Amino acid sequence: MLNKTKSKYIKNLSFYYIGHFSKFIKRGSKRIGFSRFSDKIEITAFKNPDKSVIIILLNKNDFNVEYNIKINEQILHDNLDSHAIVTWRCNL
View 1 (cartoon, rainbow, N blue to C red):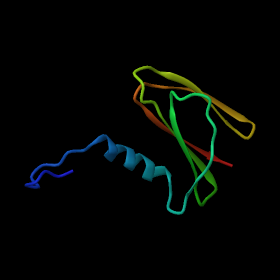
View 2: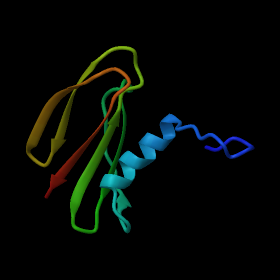
View 3: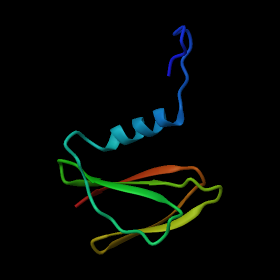
């Protein structure tokens, strides 16, 4: 964002989120369905044109959250730090 005199710019958190998304979600990607069993983590998922699946997790809490991701028969267990964002890229 630029101020009115255009002499100073400010990077909001959205600047980093959009940069993060654009690094992994490619042009032509399609948002895909998912299910979750907790509202402690925000999640979204996309399928890229190269068939890779991108899963983005956001923890907006003041505490860490453990989670599992299951894709087909594979299960991934990890911990998401408070106020962190993470992306998983899966090749199916």
